[in-house]
Amino acid sequence: MTASTRLLIVGPQGSGKGTQGVRISEAFGVPVVSTGDIFRANINGGTELGAQVSEITARGDLVPDELTSEIVRDRLSDEDAANGFVLDGYPRNAVQVGHLDDFLGGRGEALDAVILLDVPREESIGRLQLRAHEQGRADDTVEGIAHRLDIYEKETAPILDVYGERGIVDRIDGVGSLDEITERIFAALAARGLAVTV
Ligand code: AMP
Image (tube, rainbow, N blue to C red; front, top):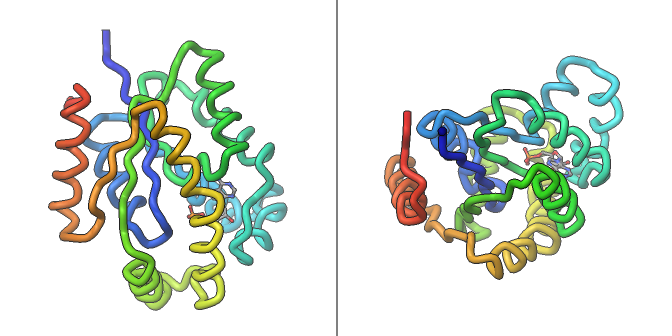
């Protein structure tokens, strides 16, 4: 039987969770499920969902919980996510944590670990401003960045208390080279018995 690897990677915008999420997914042979990427693909593809969320994401506000959770439930029901996944950007508040618990609980599953990429606010802002120059994302304006970091601190950081009580949070220092940070993550996961399989 294949062991499961159900992970969540959390961190402020600009913490590098997108990059590290992909590295973890490749190493463990499970897909990344990034709500931000799903929304951006729909906006760029001109879908109905894209039209629904484009203004909300451009403002840096959160897309309604029920809509977001439905998209995640659909995606996690795909066959490639049966043995695990790396969630990136979801859940982002307490309501979404409840939705995910209900969904996974209904399948007799639970998250195995929550990786928190710890990066100071000033460092996040610097990295996001650099990304704004390089990628020109619509929500990477100075106001957009500050607004999203505020939402992170107010709504997303508290979910770490919930997962912390379950004993599944690994706090990783997110400052360093990409390879150093990946090594820290793999070491923390290995300590939980989650070893790289691919
Ligand atoms: P991200 O790439 O994770 O920073 O997400 C980009 C934008 O997509 C966010 O600023 C939100 O507008 C929206 N978004 C992504 N994930 C969620 C979520 N879990 N709940 C609500 N909105 C989200």
